[in-house]
Image: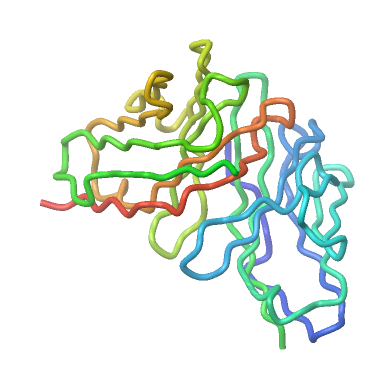
Length: 111
Length: 121
């Protein structure tokens, strides 16, 4: 399986909203409601932001939301804050043999 | 709260075996979750290596499956990763994670801080 496709970078100003896409196939993103998103600040370990496409772990602000349409999942960050500047990775379950795919990552810049 | 801590060799010679230990505190590795490893090559993205359960069930990345073994030590509350026949391409930060199976096996939370393993002679 190939990695999921994410834009290499996105940007937005404080207070604005940005959306990061994650495109796969019907064998992964499109076939299962098992998309997760992770946030990684420089030099830090990734942190789980979203699972089951739309579910936020405890402690994740509701400014972060997830969705999916067909083979593409999306992470939307509203009310951008400077602290949101980070790399974001999507992940999907892929197949009955339990394979996990990651996207290549998207760098979010808060202008 | 649950915490994971990786310990690794730092430097491994090409063709040798990489061994990583993941120590778990605040939760028993025999209590229902899977436990996994993920790596990140310098400046690159994330790559899932595999996940293992105390029942003996395990799943590995097909691209690494022939070289990977993961196991649990419930008496010491830790789990292990071994990766054989390493090359420079295996140089990466290796992370230990807890895995929620009910969420598709890709809900990784929490993560250890990561440990850099460099493959070089």
